[in-house]
Length: 189
Image (cartoon, rainbow, N blue to C red; front, side, top):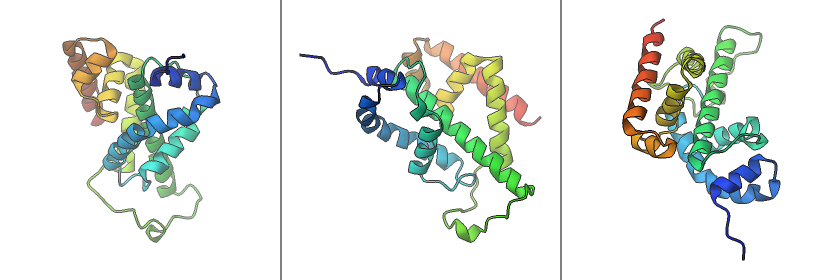
């Protein structure tokens, strides 16, 4: 009798192109992806008038559904998904900025998006700026960027990150503080 595959093994199989596990994988990962999407959209609600399902679909179409990643664990997969969501939202903010600056498109009416409400969330310029800074942080200090992604964007606690990565809590906290401070220092630039 064959032992059932773990989610990590199923994700690896799907990522390597084995489409027969897609339905099982999707059924297992959707609740956590939805939780991450809700958190991301809450942060950026003025930027992207999307539902969590629309954000997940966009992320799936752009990157997750294509596979080809090296999955270390389910948590690693969720960190990748969170990063992909952040990139979708940054791209959406860039598009909104281009529209605002007159890229030749006809401006959309707010009436066409009744779910669009002004909030205290960041404006498109801030989202684009954070996205660009995260790309720079990934180049300057990939370990700090990974912890920032996992903690701030994916919502893992520092304790969970330590457990998932095999780092000590102190190492994770140091990377978090280093990444956070690096971003704060550059936010004013």
